Amino acid sequence: MTPRKTDFPLDQCRCHLETGPIVLVGSQWQTERNLMVMGWHMMLGFTPAHFGCLITAANHSHRLVRESRECTINIPTLELADAVVGVGNSDGDALDKFDAFGLTPASGKIVSAPLVEECYASFECRLVDDSQIDRHELFIWEIVKAHVDTSIDLPRTLHYRGHGRFMVAGDEIDRSADFRVQNL
Amino acid sequence: MTPRKTDFPLDQCRCHLETGPIVLVGSQWQTERNLMVMGWHMMLGFTPAHFGCLITAANHSHRLVRESRECTINIPTLELADAVVGVGNSDGDALDKFDAFGLTPASGKIVSAPLVEECYASFECRLVDDSQIDRHELFIWEIVKAHVDTSIDLPRTLHYRGHGRFMVAGDEIDRSADFRVQNL
Image 1 (tube, chains in turn green, cyan):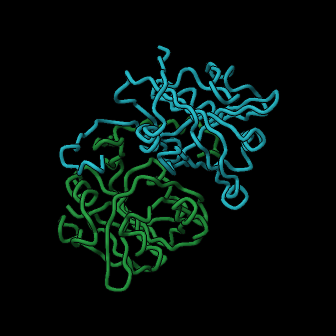
Image 2 (cartoon, chains in turn cyan, green):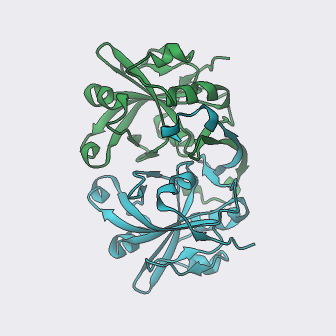
Image 3 (spheres, chains in turn purple, orange):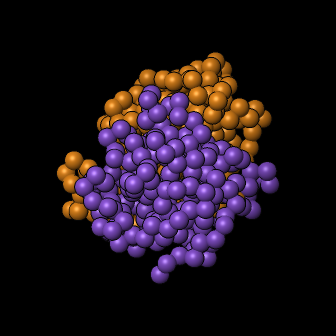
């Protein structure tokens, strides 16, 4: 079933990205588009919502996001595992990954890079700091628009453990009663 | 039960950190030591095993790791949730967090910062790039020694969702049969 995503507050993006799921990076430059699977990322700020990720020069997406200075970050869940494994094990210069793995490109509000319709959360990003690309292959983005299906309270996200194994997000524990208010 | 950690290959650290668990950062500078909970981190390389994390200047640990240029990264699991919540909701300048929350400091092989005995995985880190601390509060470390209890195949790590809620690591799916060999 296609998620029903609506506008989501930028300063809350961490609630979906801090848990460390693998994500699908959407990119577009001129007539080329691509998707890649990526697990090396982190939040770098609440407001603005800064986000860092590593995309090596060996990835077809590297040139596309570097030239366009845009991308989308899309969070898949367990039912998309086949597509995730397919995207991660094919070459963007040899095929269109949306077509090949049954994913639907959707238009963003701000960036030209495609969102992934089937993902429950999608974030539009603009490059704000390119200074660490050559040194660490680290792209630093500002999330400028967030789309989340908030009806999905416990998304079964995928977390990569290496060697073809994924941890699937499990139960939740709510310890908010033990938190200081300013830490919530 | 105390984990039985042994030497672990540095180029495999990603298997434990890439899933995005919250970690306990151990620090020591002169006579001061501290622990903090941290969820904004990412792998930045296999060999050397580079790792980035955000530690704001508001954290008591910031000065300790900046001065000592060392830290330890320790991964707790579900049975340590009380200690994690305690560490995350107290001040390192007001109490010793090891004593206060029943955690045992252990000696590293290379760095002076304390490891957390009760965590199933601990990594000794040296600062290799301080250039992004002032700009992004981003510390870039090299993991120089890794200790993991490999008898724990599916660690029930904690992944922060904000607002006092943690996702607990769930089941695993093994898709290695669908991976290209070079991607494993």
